[in-house]
Amino acid sequence: VKLKKFVDSLPIMETLKPNRKTKHESYYVVSMEETRQRLHRDLAPTTVWGYQGQYPGPTIDVNQGERVRIKWVNNLPSTHFLPVDKSIHDLDHLPEVRTVTHLHGANVAPESDGYPEAWYTKDYKEVGPFFKQKVYEYNNFQRGATLWYHDHAMGITRLNVYAGLAGMYIIRDHKERSLGLPEGPYEIPLIIQDRTFNRDGSLFYPEQPNNPSEDLPHPSIQPFFLGDTIVVNGKVWPFLEVEPRKYRFRILNASNTRSYQLYLDSGQSFHQIGSDGGLLAQTVKLEKIEIEPGVRVDVIVDFSDYDGDTILLKNDLGPNAAPEDETDDILQFKVTKSLSGKDHGRIPQYLSEIPTLTKNNITAIRNLKLVSTTDKWERPLLLLDHKMWNDPITEKPQLGATEIWSLINVTGFSHPIHIHLVQFQILDRRPFDLDRYNQDGQIVYTGPAKPPAPNERGWKDIVSAPSAEITRVIMKFSPYTGHYVWHCHILEHEDYDMMRPLLVVPQEK
Ligand code: C2O
Image (cartoon, rainbow, N blue to C red):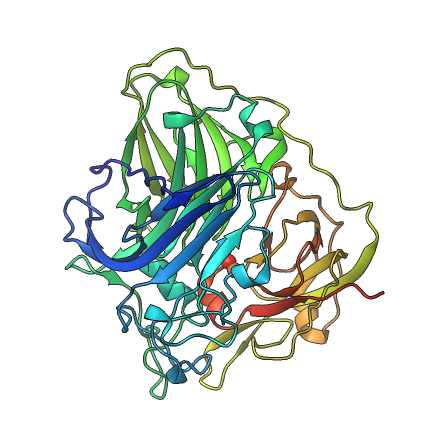
């Protein structure tokens, strides 16, 4: 369906109120519900799944060090409204609708991390083999950051997130508060996703590839999904009326597969102040920002010189874009509100201290390949180091260890690699000859290692690992031992089968 752009105003997700708040903790109950929501003026209400019956879910806003406990309740129907491929992960033996919530980017104990096999059904009638507790605990010791929560159930994460199970989670700290960044109504979360709609307003998700071979499972998972419509904070191509002043936008790409190259059609720059794990050391001025699935960028945009103007937040599709592709538009800013008082918001040059990990003792260096092969139906199958999810655990860092992971991407495209539990730092990327590798398996470098871009020199939990490059990250595994995961954040890849367990083991004496 063709939908008119910029006719609905941008919704701002409500901030979730705790059910109970004491000196010691904030306790929330969050219920996952099926509901119908109008996502565009001219579209019939769409069936979605939302936390608290809202798509996207309400924003959870906490202070550093605040002890938060959340009971994530599954109140969803027993059948999925999207096509579930039961040929993967033995899903034909499991209940169709299962959920488990992961707080992406958080440093949490394993029982509260949302392990994919810690899923449960409505009323906990059935639970996965790793299910341990109903109430999750978040200590929020890490620095202020834009995190997000989303479903992580084994083999159906792409469908549960596409159905709507995602929301923002903000941690605030004193140091950040003292910087005088734009706040209150001038600090706005933007959750960007792509969707495709059927005529009746329902969400479309493909059941099969375009030319399915006959014996293919039905439905059958595909290696990627790109929607033809952009949805921000749950509205199709919305507009936002702003004052001629500085705004802070916490931008999250919660799309399944799509990456964006964000820019403003006014030609003005973004001032990027934060990455996945919080503030950068210094503000970085950028005309274009790439944002891969799962990634957050925290930016300030200054509208003061644009009174009365209309500015588009655009996605650069590059020179080969199809003319009918409309995903180059994201959101419209209308600088039509009058300035309500002086703009006290600042764009500081220096933002925070980022301690370096490179001086630590390196306990292990792991060479990990990102590879593609095919399954028994000749479908693309993407893997980490040639291993399926169910293969024995190979990544077992010791508690407190600092490790370097070299991600050797021998596939034809970039993968956003996410590692649970930690925030890491990007060391460098070095190109190699992929044709040569495909011939004889040798890694022959074609250039020197490149340092990360200025806006990547902060804490990250997702790293872009481009094709034909070796991307190195460094991280310290603490303060918990136990079961976590690492995976590609293209959700179609994560589900099949680009996800591996990660087990933090006690320190050897
Ligand atoms: Cu945002 Cu393991 O995921």
